[in-house]
Image (cartoon, rainbow, N blue to C red; front, side, top):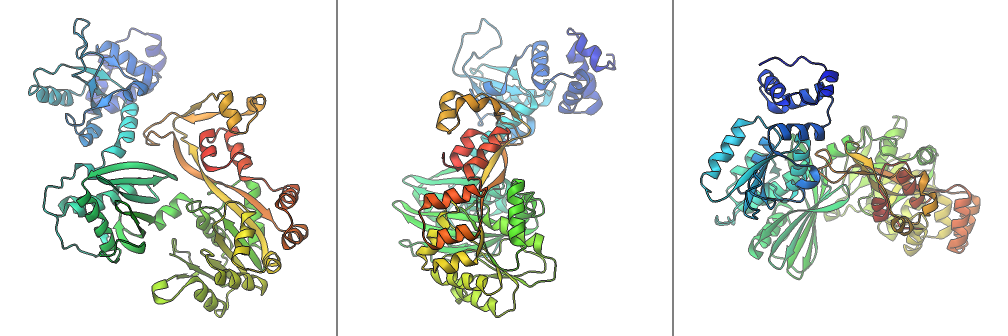
Length: 584
């Protein structure tokens, strides 16, 4: 057998070259068919799809594309999911015919084994050995690229996570250890209680997915498990049996130090877990429903926050340059209030952390009060709220004012007392950064009015308001050009005649984005800088139309306009901005 030494040009120029021999030679050199395939692609300058098609023809297999993979039904009983991931070989129920010959009649009972490495004799031998126990079941082989199989398995992973393989035929232990969870695969598999294994493996999988929340929903016939990844809920598992669902919720209550006997009223708690050598906090909300109870576990991972935000800078969060300049300008003022608003999970706290990190020069006393402290900031006094001990936002804020602060961050303004103290602090020489739940910069005024804060004092203290959202970005590894029909454009508030200036792009799905087409999020904002005209309009309770007209006249950009700008640059999709923002 001759060693392959041809150049990419010569191989590509000769379409009849036997890629089988080249692959075998490289496989002997590397000891791995996948690595040999990668080198062969480099040598031939062929794309993954072209390489797959040519190898399939020479090995007499059917080439399978990513689109075709999604049309087949997998059978993880023949090749379990974990083994399929390791071997890059997936078993499907074959509806196109159970044999590679034209003479074989079509059947819906055959199997199709899709493999990435056509030289993987061990995998093929293992499959043939298993099929000896099914002599009446026909099967055939197909070839797909390693990237397509990995992407397909990444999508399917959410349906076959660690908890799906757990059996509940063991007796449920009544005694559980309320200590902090140690989340390791070895610890999960060795625990005697299936309920503990289920909950721990669910949390472990959620952390691996970089989820922000875990939803445990009791249904009529069992438990539905969902995770929120990049702001979108995804079903990751289902567990049959009402008894099991109740026991899982009881376990959550035990580790959160809640009352397991109380099932009629909401409860809030928290617990800690150790994962990858670091402590992670979980905030727990229990809510009764018609079938039992639901639980939401908010994941507060300080390490994930710092990594995701690229060192906690405003640029790393993805704000446009104008919004970044505005926030830095307001943050540099000696006193007054900066409000960041938006719904839960829109990144408000992360934005305030980024601002505090940038202005923290060691010359001023910075104090925060939060519920809870989500990320530790150097040289800043951070106080966690403890309502069980009587330390509320209002009481803590009163104490902070006696602690000689220069700048204060209030995690969230929830009540009238906290709002009034924050406004007074901003009026008496302190700089206050805080968040409040509202849909846009104009709704903030109404929120403070409802909390019985004097409008004149509020607008006098206010330096600016930032309303923000988080948008998923197209995956950079699989983004391709996209076309959008006229109806979608009209529903999105875009005139079809102007669509020619837009760069419509969409992620097709790959292993890096777990098949979703999106990877990572970035912030968009509408920023309102206060001036004398706006203060007068707000204090006089002028009509909303007049306030908006003045704000836009001074250069404010709406959330929707900022989102459309990202679509125009091909960074996200119309579906995503329609999910997050409203058409104006």
